[in-house]
Image 1 (cartoon, rainbow, N blue to C red):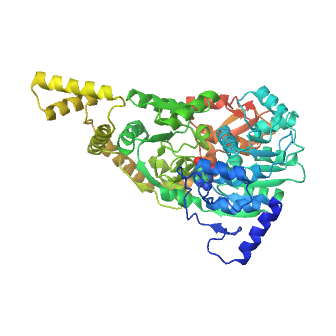
Image 2: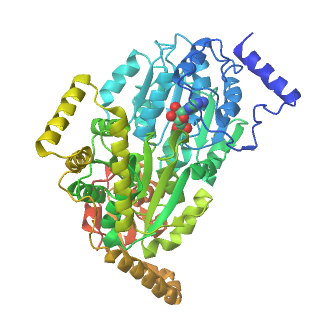
Image 3: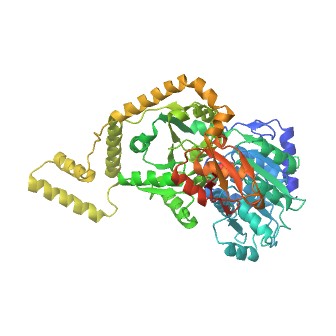
Length: 601
Ligand code: AMP
């Protein structure tokens, strides 16, 4: 019996059996009633795998078992049968739901042998996601050592990608720009492409890649399977899906609520000038495990990292200037725990999947609700609990509602941690370290004997008892820096008073603000800039808005009129752009060309 036939039979039997554990039907939202379970102990070959019955090969089932996957996640249960049949599919799900395996497993199982050209193309918005998806494909294909997966993305060597493609590749995972380059130059042959996946389609839209995606879609053979995954479904993505997908199965996983349930979300009202101080206090009081701090611009990543380093934290930076190989090393160090804190911009950290992230700090307000969801999704991975803390200044207060709407829950207020809270946390951590040291001991027995001798010698020499000795050892472990913080904390009160005062002032100024919405008033607050990209680069307003908003940390709606000419464009931006943002924008590349932004007098 062919695989297709087997799956068809399974589907038919599900439709006739009214069993409660049936595979969820498509076209209806699925509640994420279960978390992804990893069972690292499970090696029992007689044990039935939760992945039986989808028509997967023994090799794949064995690989999944080795990876410790016990059961398919809800999105996998729903997607496997449809994709094994070769149907098109639209899935609304975020990272953390197991969506990569949901498409990768059936796609791998349907690959044909002895083809030299790529059969599968996965488009992802960022190189980090492209690399991760490629890595997932490789790990799921462990039972097929000859299968070749290649990640292609900008910033990596083009020629080495060409030479790998020449040798033969089955699955290509790439960012739209680089994939287009390969298609245009004929270095990636599309004749055998039978499946295209658009991963995180809403992110691709947000980053201005949608035209590129449509161009790529236009190059594909008529007979192909299209799969689209997106965390949200803006109208542009619906339109794309209607236009290109053929009667797709539709699956919705309501994972925002699931993520929200696992992630404790709070905000701190804080004046900009106190943010660094507040950050240091939060880091002391809230967690010991991996932390990502999101900031608006590259320049701020450096300022924040330096401030934290000078107060004794091990910090790494992830921004657009960090070269690709260094990024990979940084993420690896974070994963292994050799660094604990990462300061990153949105673009650099998108798609990052590190399980040990326990805390996400939004040092700067995210660009919008979707960006917030993506940022906090870096914690609470693989069923763990996570924390997210957002710094909000008084001007940003009214954006909080948008974020709450995006996650479907209230974000609670918290205060900047006080001295007494930090001291309590320090003592708890010390107690934990001591307890863990007492229960682990030294690795080499010989060292334990020698240390005991040292204790005995000192005890005898100074004629002190074991309690005094223990105290001396603890003192030694703590070192010379003070155990308790006693610094000035008046600023915490002043900061929240200042925020409250600004709130009241803002209420009084409501009517004045209404006038600000007057288009003439808005225009007076804007400056005109010239950028050196235009129609010849196929630039669209969305590309400029997406790129500039990301880089300058502006809300998209704060960007004014855009006029595009053949070789340049005009764009209106709020007055008073800081110099460092301006310099970053100069070097920013849109449609593969430097903006070289300049004020237009
Ligand atoms: P994703 O949503 O694709 O980003 O996957 C989130 C995490 O869940 C990844 O680390 C996967 O390795 C893991 N995962 C995916 N499917 C399963 C499964 N059925 N059981 C256990 N873990 C899984």
